[in-house]
Length: 184
Ligand SMILES: Cc1cc2nc3c(=O)[nH]c(=O)nc-3n(C[C@H](O)[C@H](O)[C@H](O)COP(=O)(O)O)c2cc1C
Image 1 (tube, rainbow, N blue to C red):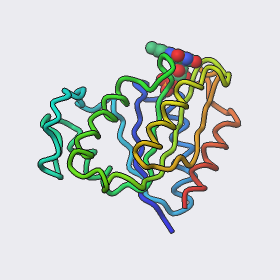
Image 2 (cartoon, protein in one colour):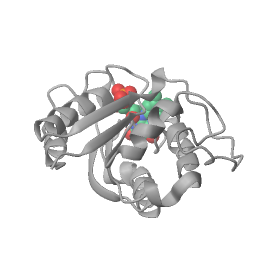
Image 3 (cartoon, rainbow, N blue to C red):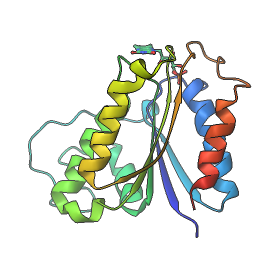
């Protein structure tokens, strides 16, 4: 069975380590017959949440702010798997990805039930390669999944990567590809 996968790429570097991780993941996911939609959030006009609590009225465009989130909402609704792809920035997601996640709140104002039951995946490069370094963001990601009623189906935590190109040829790319392939 194939699945609809949504990739939210929070890296601002188009050829950075996150982008290379995503490419490997997609290679595996497509080889298993899944369909993939990827949004490179840095290129999109996505404003931070205003906290107005007034969204959810129009299910097709649930947020009061009208920007590029309207491209993501319909794909998010249909997605069975959501991939959070982001470099670690100060032990968290980048602002690009966090703004997008916050704006999904409007979908949940519209219909919380329709957003639950998804699977999710984390793809994250970082400079430091240690369990301690990844602990805060893993805790955040797991908390997010649990409270949204989503199932974590895999994390690629790729430490030791700082510059563009550092990930090239690393075995972690095979792990990302295998994770993509495992989505069925
Ligand atoms: C603003 C900023 C904050 C960062 N914070 C962390 C951090 O908290 N821990 C860490 O290990 N690496 C940190 N890094 C390093 C990035 O996670 C690393 O360079 C990553 O490989 C970048 O991915 P990209 O090539 O997709 O942009 C930070 C980098 C920047 C620019």
